[in-house]
Each structure stands twice: as C-alpha cells, then as structure tokens.
Length: 183
Image 1 (cartoon, one colour):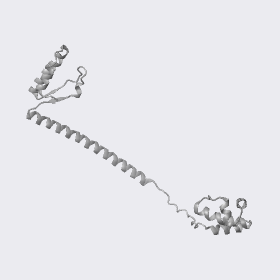
Image 2: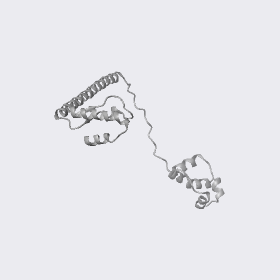
Image 3: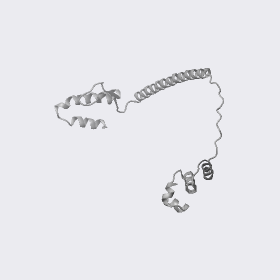
C-alpha cells in the first residue's frame, strides 16, 4: 500500500518505454478515484497482473459513498440471510415429511409377540475336588495318576494353563519325572 504521493513517485521513477501504458493507467486511476471515490478494474488481465482479484481501491471516499456502500452491503447480507433461512425452511419441511412417512410406516408394521426363550440356569463353576471326584467315578486309573491330577487340576482352573515342569510336580507328589509324564 502506498499513498498518492508515493504512487506518483513510483510510477514516474521508471523511464522505460514499456512503462508508458502503465503510467497512463495510473493517471486514469488517480483521476477516477479523486472524482468518484473508487476505481473498479475491468474484468481482464493486463500483462502478468490478474486484475479481477483487485476489485476496488478506496481513497478517502465521500461520506455519501460510504453510506451508500454500507447500505448496499447490508442489503446484500440481508438477502443472503433470507436465502439461507429459506433453505433451512425447505430442509425442515422435507425432514417433517420424511418423519411423517417413517412414523406411518412404523405404525403399519406388526411384530408378533413371542415368548422369551427359557434359558437354563447357569450352574456355578465346579471346583477341583468336584472335577477329580467326577473323573474318579468314571475312570479307573492308578493312584499316582490321581496324585498328579490333584496337583494339575487346581493350577489349570486357577491360571488356565500349566507351566510347571515334570520334576517340580514329581517333587510335590513324590514321583520321578518320567512317572509324572506317564501319569
């Protein structure tokens, strides 16, 4: 941004012949701003400058111009607001119609009432002695099998896995490691 004096100094500082069209344009710009209070560029490109991006330059516009612009801006804003409100109204009406349709459809659907299936009661988890007693009543095995099982079953129920080596179990139940593995 430069003031008028700086703009004139900047433009007149160039002596190249290519600068003449630009100098003429700046002279037109300054004259138009002093006369109208603003300048609007034409909708075309000059050289490498994209003119549509630089719409209006204000230099101390008269109060009537400012009031007129403020009024036009306010009217444009109000028109935009009215358009948004109309869009919302249309959307709300569409949602209302859709809701009425869905409610109407739901009202026509008849779901037969069925009795809830009876779920058998869940038995409490069995304990290690209960498992061992159940197995002993169905399986005939030597006593050393039941000794090893008496050590292994509580570990499996408690931890879900057995990570003890056969020597340790053998030491606890009084058997050699090979016999523990066989049991």
